[in-house]
Amino acid sequence: MVRSVGVSVDETTILEEFVSELTDDFPPEMVRECLDELEVSEPEQETPREIIEIKDDYETLHVRLMIYQLKSPKKRDAAMRTLTQNKSNLNAIFPEKTHKKLIKELKKLRSATKREYEEAYCFGLIKKLEQGVEKELQSNSTPATKYSRLHTARLFLQSLGFDKYLNVAPFNTRIKVKEKRRVAIFNYEFQELIQAIKNAPRLNKNSEHRKLKDLCYFMLMRNAGAMPHELAKLKYSDFDEKTGFIKLRDERGKERRLPLDDKTRRYLIEQCAESPNSDKNQSLLKGTGPRYMRCRFEMYAELAGLERNNLSPKSLRYAFAKQKIRRKTNRTYISKCLGMTKQSADKIISFYKR
Image: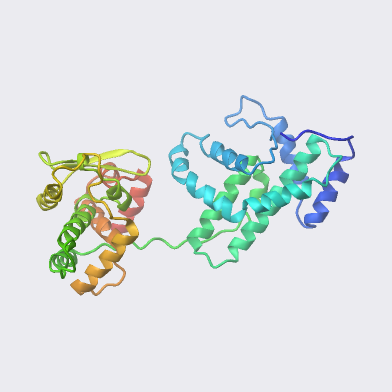
């Protein structure tokens, strides 16, 4: 933790001197107001905040952002899913080299007290963050990326206790994000795709084994609503040949068991028979990464002569969701089948009910 050094001098002189080197149009008074509010915060409040302890290491900022996200039980699940994403976003708009540059500038304040150093440090963080956000908003990134990084910047300000800056430009910028086009593959298109896989030319001795693996992959996405990362983690022990159930795990390790139709079940039994002595903990569909399987999907779609060029492996999963929704299955069951939250399931349900 930074300790006060030297003799105390006037607070306004220290902060204003530092601010004048960075900018002339950013209100430094709000930094003092926020720090004053943090000092008088009471433990009885719903979300008590401690006074900021300044540390000269970049990792502390990530930890502080993570702790803030996990404070609210209602938002805890959403926070756990976005921790990694927020870390990469913060690295993009406020990289470590920028933090080091800020610390270098702060070393000029040799006679500052701890409180004066805190004011200057917090103001410097906000100003550098503002510059990073403005640069991001002017970049060629997609609206979804800009929205995500702006949201991370706002979370970061809240984690420091500087909520007042949320209404200051550019942190109050509104970005319109286009709604996802959830294109579902039609049944006849899927049948043509499966037939194209079966009729694909044999290129080498492993071609038949590769085609069988592709059939299992696409059938599981279409008839079980499996996600690409779930299939990449699928093990031999996750498939029960007797009952025809399969166990899928999401990114957080949460499991869900789903029944399989007869065709998918037969393909998986055939896949297991290819390696009867395999370890039960080995990958069942090894070599089926999302990018590689997207290329395989495009190849088979071209062989099948599918006219729509906006189809992707996700179209198989959307077709599964669309089928469940048309049968008027409740949202709790749909969210369990798709391995997503009820809020995310509501978006898909409302999309296909239009």
